[in-house]
Image 1 (cartoon, rainbow, N blue to C red):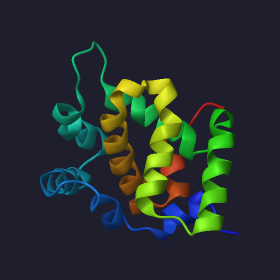
Image 2: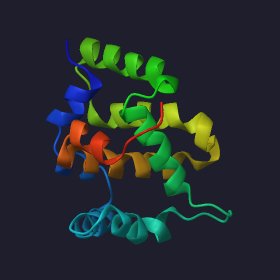
Image 3: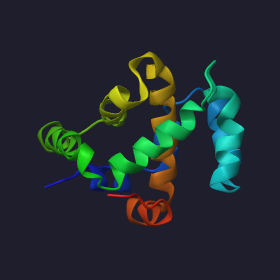
Image 4: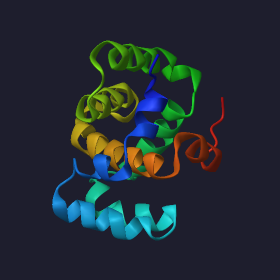
Length: 141
């Protein structure tokens, strides 16, 4: 039985990045050569909105909780696992399903930013593997 974790681990970072506009792909590739902090600093202009907090910080926190097994996202992960097993999965649909799972916490008004951020983070996770990604980004259960 295929799972979301297997699907992400089998999808390359470049596969995820290909979903972004070309200029964004170049920014992310360049930032990947640096630390994760540098990645988010490079993405800040793209992700900042006219609020007092950085949407990317919130997206990353919720993405990490989602991907690394927090119980709040157990049902959403199961639904995506079921979809992958029934339909084979498609990276754009998997990304959209993850973004939809995060949307109630982050805010539905940020849908485009969430989708963009999730795509970048999926690329990052695929680049190192989910197990290593979660070791580097521990969550509080």
